[in-house]
Image 1 (cartoon, helix red, strand yellow):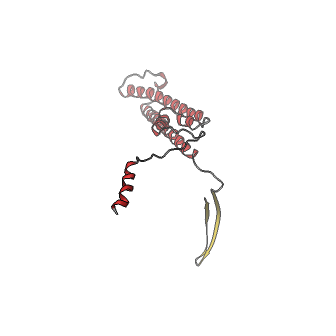
Image 2 (tube, helix red, strand yellow):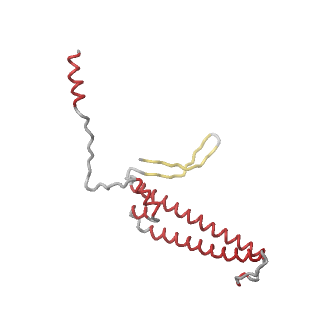
Image 3 (cartoon, rainbow, N blue to C red):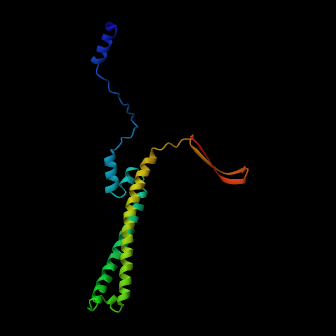
Amino acid sequence: MLFLFGPSASAQQANPEKKPTELVTPNQKKEMSHVKKATLYSIIPGGGQIYNKSYWKVPVIYVGFGALTYSFIFYNQLYGDVRASYIQSINGQPITNLEYANVPEEMLYTLRESYRKSRDLSAIGLAGWYVFNLVDAAVDAHLQEFDVSDKLSLKITPDYRYSYTGYSTGINLKFRF
């Protein structure tokens, strides 16, 4: 028995393991590492859209960033002016900004809070637009590889059923894949 199985066991140990080979077709897209993709998405606004070849989205993203940045700068400037006038007013000093010279102290406080709120909302909008940019690029990259064949379908129809309690209505979803 040892003579029968001995040579086959030693033959299996003598052969090194063969590594599987990959077939590369000429049309196969070279994959970028996930680290590079994430860096491209996060550092350059619109970088993920450029990588996904969704060039039409890049101006939309930059217009959004431009509008929100302008809004932030505009309200920050107004906030700074009103804040300085309010501080001068509560300290009993004459208000140097002629635009707010005859405005009562309570109104200066209300304006200051309003401009601060608008400035902060612009900053939140900028952060939200940045996150939207990242999510859009990631979803677009993921959906480029999505299989959209004729076998996939979704049919939505109204549904009427009769049961012992009476008629019931609903929506019928039929998936085919």
